[in-house]
Length: 117
Image (tube, rainbow, N blue to C red):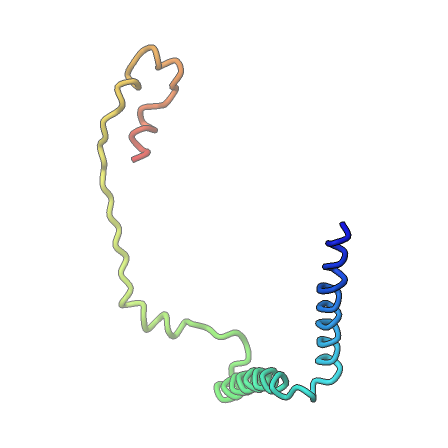
């Protein structure tokens, strides 16, 4: 028990305190870490640029509501093909299904067995 407490006091507590202090410094003085600040600012700048381009596109087209794909659908509709096939599959039934002994235990309709395929 003494050895585990010694390990905690020697290694774990100083490491945790160091991490907490480092996080507090980064939050309080972000100017001291320009490499962290530029990554967040470039991400914010790209988001602002995207929003601004969307607003400009909306202003040019005059559409302020949700974008509709109706024009794209009318152009692509002739190229859409629907292929539907149907096949009847016949399978052999297990011999135990025809046995009168197991007929009481297995109450499976013959039609439902054929439709499972």
